[in-house]
Length: 278
Length: 264
Ligand SMILES: Nc1ncnc2c1ncn2[C@@H]1O[C@H](COP(=O)(O)OP(=O)(O)OP(=O)(O)O)[C@@H](O)[C@H]1O
Ligand SMILES: [Mg+2]
Picture 1 (tube, rainbow over the protein chains, first blue to last red):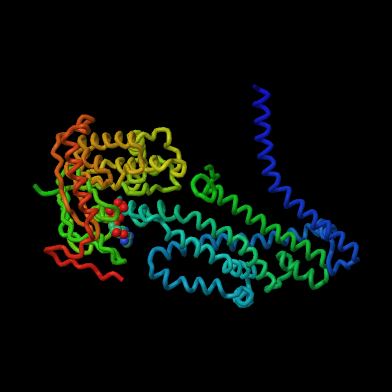
Picture 2: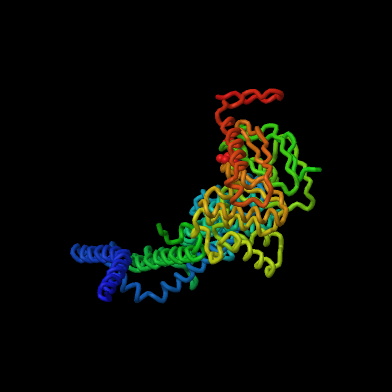
């Protein structure tokens, strides 16, 4: 009896570990294979590092230049975070404003779209000139412009897609505008808002990087994009790869962080976050 | 006696051109239990919504004879907030009215217990079955101690046993508190068992075709369900209903000016 039960339980745990491990092991194997092939290719063809450095060299550069590169990454991260928080707060407030009156929404929404469709590379120089005393602020504004729209459009959609019956229920109990907003519209919009955040997190980083490229500011407080730019000028290609690696890593960390946050907030109730049992 | 709720010549046309109600007259007395039956799409939900003040009517009026009216509505769909637990859902009307938390907690507990959901206070709607969700919705309506209760097919999704238990509960509550109840159902037996009056409606346009008083004393019990009187009432309602189902959609109603928009 006990033997039987034990065998059964070990089988179950085997199954679950197998499923988890395939999620992690498979991409890692692919990654290692690609890296090995890359390294082998570089060595076989004797490519000079300024054309294509091998992964080992990139790693080595990352370690030797770590202090400088990581400091720059933090600067870019700071810009990203400030722009992202500004986009989240302003995006939420503007969507709330939009839902207060169809007139406001109709008259302002096109401008939000225009802001979104204007290429950031084209307007970044302008913004940098206008705010030339404060480069940090200029970079934040650029990143904010890029990050802001997905939050506004998603949250506005969410605030407007409230269950009709619930709206009626609130009407029946004579809920004030404020009560309806706080207890009905905002919770309904939460999944949409969080979806917007997940898109905007990555966009804020891209916005910051692009703006840094355009600004090309040096000095002690230069961001990671500046390092990439200068490395490519100086043909320090391994260093450029290392900086690129850091930037991409940061993007992934931001995305994962926001996904975890979103799953945690929606946790128990929303279809996207709950475990399905049939 | 002034009726508690009086619909005078109420018409409702939805913006897509559907004539949901045409020249509807209905007087409901104070503390009366009235059921609306009729084929699907005949405008029963529309009547309830208009009584509740949700959505405008195109013509006609409603006169109220209830002083200090407190409405509660059980919608056809459960309409629960998915982000809130059962107890938070039931608590909502009290929260909106600003009832003190301590007092509200007691009422919420009572209401949940009445619909037989004790133990599920902290569950989320997605963890409940369809019938359980409906019972949460009923608890939410009862928690404010309304004096006008509008229920739109509240027991449609429930099994026979739970349905008759809740039928008895509603009757008990009704006779205790003397609420005015307007109750929509597809179930003729339920309508006859519960009501003072059964209103039969016909579709396109929605209107009243029969108004059948159920002259049987309360409290009604299982004995009433097996009585001859009960069976006769059921047959009468059912015949009226059959008549409305079989007839062609009316194009012209004698004595008024209704003519439908041409069909394209
Ligand atoms: N929001 C709406 N917009 C347009 N037409 C509607 C709307 N709601 C209801 N209708 C129409 O009004 C008519 C009456 O609808 P209502 O929901 O009142 O019917 P009902 O008697 O409650 O039906 P059921 O028993 O199926 O719930 C239907 O023909 C329907 O098509
Ligand atoms: Mg209906």
